[in-house]
Image 1: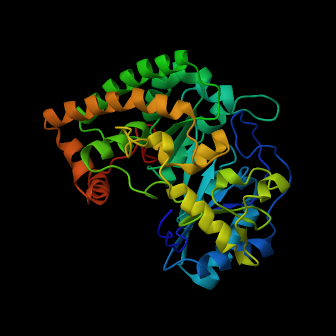
Image 2: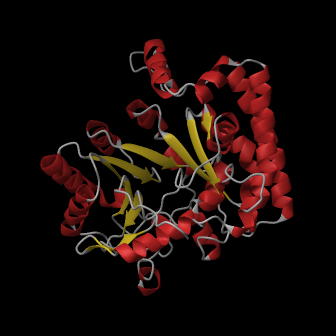
Length: 396
């Protein structure tokens, strides 16, 4: 492929500390839930490995399974890292939220561990996929915790997954999440599902409604982030994505299984059995298999055949080799649903962006053209003492 890709130091690592989970979500790529967890020695070795293979800072995200099933282990890992490396490692977490309580939330706050919360939209949308072992929906168990969650971090991100069966709830689900107090909604499709043209038609109708909702909020100077729109507006307002911008698997981004094996991305771990181990890049005890690591990085950076000559190249999500591999078994083979989805969504997004630009909307221009916007926006919120609408002042 010409010149070899320069391998980078690790910046982000998903630390999968358990294969176990208290939910049985239909679309989970972690697959079979087995009671197999990372031991403390492997955890310590993982932190040592990441510090050694990163520069000044490495961001580690607790993953699973459900990481809070092993809350005691999380505490030990954080203590070890802080004592040995001080601030070299920053911790994050991805959680289903059902096990959160005041004690855990206080620990997360004290240790500055920011987390994303998996919640799929409204009750119907969420409970269709995200259920407990007894088949009971998990929506209410999360909603009842939101006040305490936003009290700890008003900027908690909602992570939502859309499947064909829930497309009809897309608009009401997004509207519901923002009405509950979320400001950031990170949403994606389950690209491995069986999508049909009728689902794309429904998605188009729902996205159109969401674009009107988004427009209204922007015109009212209400700050919201909706990833299907915001990430694509960036490429409208600024520049197309470059190689490795959002998916740098096996390079600056890696994942570590409970066994200590290193994978290109958390989507490659699965059950960490022999079949999945073919994709391992080494382990935290022996280090990287540099030959395999370079192979995955170079494959991910190759231009996809189906993208050559496409007018949308650089603006869509075909950049994610992890998604491609999960859906098709190849980093370079793009699932057809992605192309159909992008061809449908980008015109809606471009129309929205153009409309806000012509209206000379100040929030739009600041958000997409002002580099310091995240910082200045946060300062504004502090000065205005803004909190999500569902968070009550305890003094009231």
